[in-house]
Picture 1 (tube, rainbow, N blue to C red):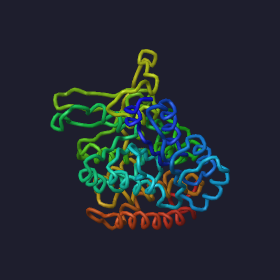
Picture 2 (tube, rainbow, N blue to C red):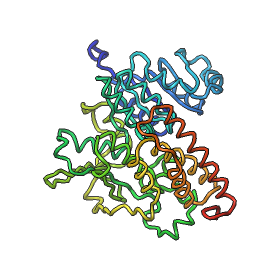
Picture 3 (cartoon, rainbow, N blue to C red):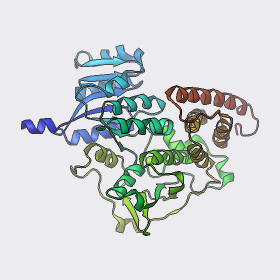
Picture 4 (tube, rainbow, N blue to C red):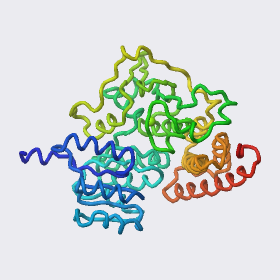
Length: 403
Ligand code: MG
């Protein structure tokens, strides 16, 4: 390899390496061994999987969120790696700023992804962002950091936002009338409100077009996820909520659309596979080769679209309203939802109680304008606590309780 090639090599840091986004990111890295060097991996509780990946990729540094898993991790490697091992809740944040990193993929699930996002931007790096909470909880802080650090940039690793970024390329702000995100509608798209009241975790985990983690699968069934995506879009593309819209599109081939003031509608279509947004986020503005097989519209025959039903999917409406309210409201909604979904998955509360608990948390929260990190984490903790109380009350058989 020529020296110039070596310099052009991407130093990739993968946060959430053992999760779905991490696995698909490493798939891309595997396809381009001359152009991508994996220099850092961060994982959570799955020390065995992290050890496996570490042996395989030989990164310079590894971060394990759970300090109690460090010994098991090193024992499993049994001398097959001699990089630096960091552990504890701050380890992924440290890893994001590891020397030599040029692109950080943040596939951490939950609020734990926020500090690594901020560290990546402060280090002036490209952030391939899959962690929703970074923008949902701290959109304004993230955007301020982007302004302060010239070389820092965010490339979205979410099919909808990646689609919209592709549709927006080269367009002026003044030419954009609306931005439309699509939603598959999830497994409950055609159910009536009555039928929705009786769905089980097993029903909700059957997603028709995407293979994802457990929480996001439920969030996609309730369409809460789509509300969070509106909040992300608001910050990523700097547009007011009034210009953001959702269309339900069950085939999941069109991921996002941009409507221009002239009345043109520009759509992005691709096979539903996260490897495309991941590869684009890593390689932009270069094109390296096929990430996924293109969609065959002639074979598919038809594409359907409908309005998002805010009555049958109140979690969507609640997430959007929290986004419009701003401040810590999105943080409260996100934390409450996480607790409610976990409880629903354990069979403790009914499906309908997810929306009830969300509404209760948003209604009761104490608004904070322009929150700093302390405000955000305090609101997150508060929402988890009140939602825990809500669950313990609704689990006793009162309205919205177990069915
Ligand atoms: Mg998405």
